[in-house]
Length: 324
Length: 308
Image 1: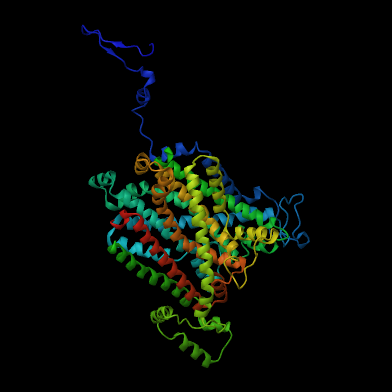
Image 2 (image 1 turned 180 degrees about the horizontal axis):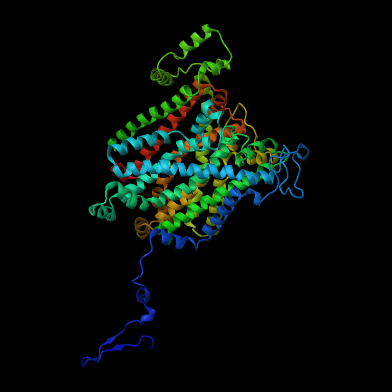
């Protein structure tokens, strides 16, 4: 069909000319080509489709995958035993088989870096899971049921929120009962006890937004019980802001572990972690900065990849932000 | 507005008592006997034990002890440290130093963070925006104590632009480097928050109206966009005071600043219960009051909060 041909009507005596744009020039054709039979993508499927195209997501996901591999299979990356240290090598530079040199105690920096991944990552992952379970449950219950339960739980969250993370962690971790049994789990427990209010607040806000939505009311009017409506309808639809904050918190918890270990009340010295390595390296900063540099770089890259993942997920889950 | 202020002020009370009660319980009921901590676990004479028990009310039930502590806290009658100095005097000496440090850090992050955030937001997608965004991510990912060591080494030792350790005088000039270190991470958050907020408001209807009625670009940005964009930033700054107090423990340790954080850390390591509880309670009070102030400011900036 030639362009902009007036469509003539021959049904009557007058010739009526309709100047209508050709169908190929209108946006209508996109609408027509939609498959009406196909089920619409869910929020998550849509987000996933969007995520796969983002370079930020791909880079951070690959970095996190690499970190996880290192944490689970350190043997794939180094054959050197990280605890076999020889003072002859104290502060020695890199040489064959020891690409990053040695610490003050003559330990291989690279091997300690690889074997320290597990503890640092474990603290981040388990603390995040802990705050998600505790903070998520409390926040969801407070937001969903409202009333006096909400008032009590919100005050409880406020009380714990008033104890700053590092400040509170120093007090808890220096208690004799905790100090004598220091491990990954005591650090995780401390961070969870102090960190849950943030997730609770976010979850509560998200649940309040969703709890009176039409689909929840519809589910209830179809005879779904209140608890079941909360679990199957409200919570899945209020997860997105929570996931974003949880991803970023994971990085914050890794940094917190390092800070506590640096202060001497985090992981015990027998556990290899980036925080412990940085703390041990502070004495030789002026003559061998690389012992401090490498664990710090590893820690920062890991934290950075979780922050970038959080950014990417937020963009994917928030259609309003996507347009910008 | 008055009703809002009243309700918000009332909320402070349970929060303050709840959090100080937790700290008090942790330090005194879970740490074993404070007398053992004082004597280092060595046997001491019953007369001294009796005197200390009476002095610290150790024979009273837990809640009475807590009540006495709160009363003493508000009358600044905090007892003496293990070394015999009055705790109130130690805090009185250390507190102004930390306050100076925290104010400088807050000022640095607020002034530089908001300015850079506004420029990045207004020039979205340009070189400045991209550079600033990447740099802020890197700063966020580096722990404060690593930043502290590196800046102390580079600026203090190698370049000699600032004193690497602060020492007892701790005046404004000495505290500049520690304040930069303390404020740097939050600076990055403020920057990103301001930028996002500016972007959200830039296309709002009221901004278009302001431009359409012929206001200068400068006035539109400074008054209309900025005021509305600052609301989340102000909230963050208030909540960040808690982070600054935690960060102060690390920063003061690295730069040898004779502030509250340093005093607290040494008290924690020495197991000085009364000192730890007093300092933490004061810090919690400061944090709670700062958040109260922020919420009131928030309500003043955004009328929607007042009437909710």
